[in-house]
Image (tube, rainbow, N blue to C red; front, side):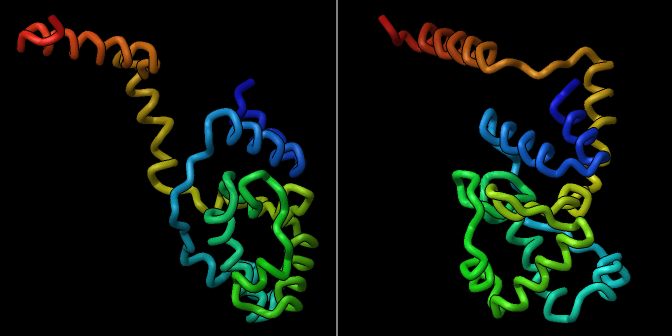
Length: 178
């Protein structure tokens, strides 16, 4: 089973510690893709956050969404670069809010399973769904089309060999390397 499939299966079970461990392992092995932007859809206006939280908590939660992309090496996890949780008072300062509002936002979000927190940091459990884009939706179709045409991604060794061959051809054509 692929890592992505393992993450989805754990997500469906609500096994947030397992999801987080898989995402951390992925980030350590090859790095996680960060976008440096986040999506806040129109559905935000009618989401359940509007009746579960006070206005200040809604503002803090929206800042947590941004922090979940900005802080730490795993999109969706607010942590330092060593996968350790950051102090709440520091994060409250970054969110420009009183610690009490930050803490009450976390408490409500943990109660409704929007946030999972452990020693690795604050994990927004539905971050991937919040940030799912049209590009992401189309990706499986693009990959299937590429495979149908017989195109595959080249390995770094194959790319390096092609570059070496190109350099050798250039050097030979220009009388270099002798």
